Image (tube, rainbow, N blue to C red; front, side, top):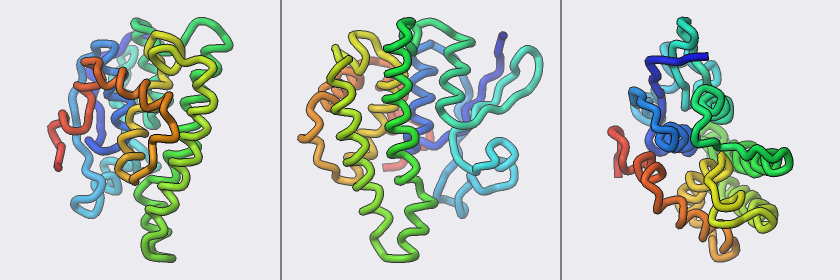
Length: 219
């Protein structure tokens, strides 16, 4: 497969978008940044034009020409796995079967175990039922998920989540800790992943992908 004309529809604060930006930066892939503001204008992700790109009305969505045909891929796991196939260096998944599977497990602890609980839509719905419930719910599942990640990662951690090479697991961990800090989660209980996060954030690719380095950043 060959790909051209990559356009990433994303939002600077979105942790799912952040993951994909890190992957693109690590692999040195050029792309056009297309901002989709999740709050302004009633939520630009809800507009008909974006709905056609992602029927879930979320970010990110990667628009590209793949083998000569225009395609749009949504959901960060799918996008990162496609980038891994198209641009295999540097690899984001280990060759060893067990370590590759453990990488995917760590990815899913965050992707399915934490992230859905902190998305704007469910938090807004919970706040309609009880004011402040959305934030408390998000904080709780950050605590539960990060504790699980901490326990699992101790077996494989080196400088990063899986040994001494950055993997997809780290792409999910770093944005999640940004969100956890926003929800005032006590990270003193997860020292292994805090140390991994610090090492990742010292790398140029993680810095380039950070929310405050994006063209749509707002303090």
